[in-house]
Structures are given as structure tokens and as C-alpha cells.
Image (cartoon, each protein chain N blue to C red):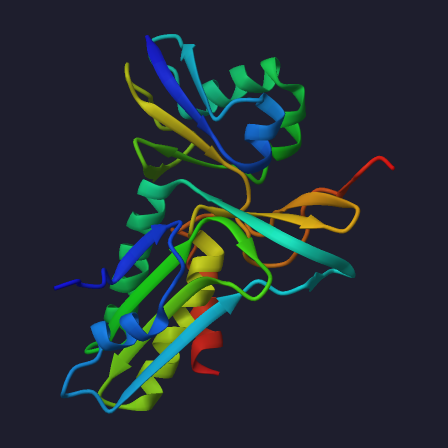
Length: 93
Length: 159
């Protein structure tokens, strides 16, 4: 079955796309989709513990089963709280 | 007649006066408004401008959730929340909140609660462009079911 993956902020930068279409196995969970993406984009692994996810624009847990046609969004930590983000990228002089 | 939506997200500049009149009624004794501004410095960096990005349909649902939480905690408070996305210059407003109530204590608390919750759970990201580079600001993992985060927002609101 086929799902649409939505990526935001730095995940979008890493993947080079805000939206991806991916084939996933029947019975796959949101977590399985994430694991599949992590193999494709190794830099995603740094977000393993801080990611949130949504299915069809509602927050959903990683153990949620996905269905054909679902829109799965992966959300890096949001702007609020303390500033513990990635190290700033310095422009080359 | 142009009506001001109470909950919205978009690229248009924010107008807090419209939000204030949209939430206030004749039974209200207080309306508290908040504007979040883009400042010119952050973590020792000189900020040039910000770009905000959001998962818009989920952000709107989160705003509805925050409004419902605030109504549950402070019944009778009428509440508006607007967030801007896209390119924002220094001094521009990124978020506007207004809370109206019969009494000022509830209006202050609900307004503070709302901005704390936005920071915790709204799927909105800030890309900071500073002198010498850029960085995505990443704070908290967004989890609307996290009771501790909600309790913390309530604690701050009532402090």
C-alpha cells in the first residue's frame, strides 16, 4: 500500500522534500514508516527520541497502524521550550 | 462585514486590535492580549529575520484544543489565537492571543496558559537566520497528551 509522508523543518531539509510517496507493507505502523525513512536518510536517526507523528493531520502514536492512502507526518521538536536545537550552521566565508 | 477568525494561521500580518474586539463582549470586565515579537538577538546571535513553518491543518486543531483546555480550566473566558507563518522581519508579531473574561485574573491566566501551550504542542517551527548562518530552533517534543507539560503550563499561568 501507498502512503504520503509529510516532513517539516530540518527533516524536510535533510530529505530535500516536504512530501514523499512511499510503499509500505500491509499492517505497517507509523514507527515502521519512520524506520524505513531512517534507512533512507541516516541523519533522521538523531530524531529517534524527539520526533512526534501525525496521521491525517491528527497526532498519533508510533504504534498506530497505517492504511492505504494515509498522510503520515513526522514532526521534529517544536519551537517552544528551551533552545536545544541542532548546532547553528555557519555560512562559509 | 469582515469578521476576525478567532483561531487562524497564515502569512498575513497580525492585528491584535481586531482580535481584542472579536473576543470581548458586554459582560467582560477584562481583556488581556499578548503579542509575540521577532527579536534581534537569540542565544548570543544577531538575528536578521525568521521564517516560520507549520503543519497548518494540525496547528488549527491544536489551537482548538488549547481553546477547549482554557475554557475547561477558566469557564467563561472567550479566547482568540492567531499565528503567522512565512518570512518575518525583526519587530513583527508572530503570534497574537486575546482572552476576555468577566474578571481580570481569569483573562491573564488564560492568555498566559495559551502561549505556553502553543510553545509546547503547536506544530510550528522557527528557522532563524542570523549574522553568519542559520538554524532551526528545536525545543520540546510535541505531545498533547503529556499531562506534566499541561500541568506546567497551568502552573505558570497561575503563578
